[in-house]
Image (cartoon, rainbow, N blue to C red):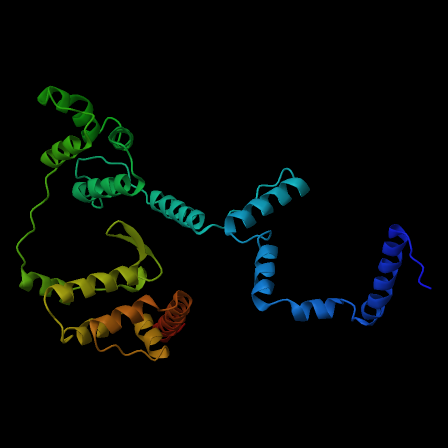
Amino acid sequence: MCTTLPHKETLLYFFKWRQQQFEPCIRGAPQDTPETIAKTIPLTKTAELRRSQRSHGLKTRNKYDKTKEDFIATKSPGQRPQQTHPAHSTLRRTARTTETMTDTSVKIFYGDYSRNDEDPTTWMQNLNTRKVLNDWTDDKAINVFESLLAEDKKAYRWWHKDLKIAELTMDRTDWTTVRKEFKKRWPLLPEPEEDLESKREELEQMRLGDRDLGTKVTYQGQELYAHVAFTNQATRLANEIGDTNAFLLPSIRNQLPEAVRNTLKSMGKKPKTWEEFRKAMMTMPLSDLREEAAEIANATASIQKSQHYAHAPLD
């Protein structure tokens, strides 16, 4: 006999039956582990995930520098971060170069030709070079120019008195005009005609005395040891007369003081060209030269003393 169940109970039994049918499949299905998930994710999806993770990193130098500055400011509020950007390094190098250039001294200018090392043309050129290198304005260049004029000397009186009277309409704030008037007052000296014969005679008559060794002299505005100045002057004259084969070098070398010749010999130097002669004399150790000169002086004194006793009358 078939018993008819109410509609609700029929639905209840139906759902229970369906649950019993599918439970074994669910229990036997493999669980989703990290390994299985990784195996089932496509490669394109993996690359996309990695890009999304990197989007939160420090991808640019600007972000890195900003993070670094914030970190330093937090840890050490008084410390200023060191800038390492290439542009900053270039600026620092430029600043150092400019500072080095400004150290090039320009001497006080007198303008009366009483000093052998004062050349008005060279002096003005050096001052103008400083202006260009340091990007001075015309006002600053003229202020520096005025400060370098020796007070109450010829150049000072020319700028503050004579020029004001002679050039009433001159623009004293324009650097180009100032340079032009300066060149008019101190024009470039004409080059004398070359007299090779007189220079040859000057070279042949050059002498370096024993008493000059170890002393300093002024040569072209610089303080040099006498043997160095002698070498520079001899080499310059040889170049001017065209003695490229060093025909006059042996006579100059043989007339050197004995201490110099002995020192060159101990150095293994026998220069055959003017350039070799110049380098050998410039690199000569001053201590060796003085020691050699002292030994020669002592030996000479001993000889003179023995000769004095030899000629002394016997009592």
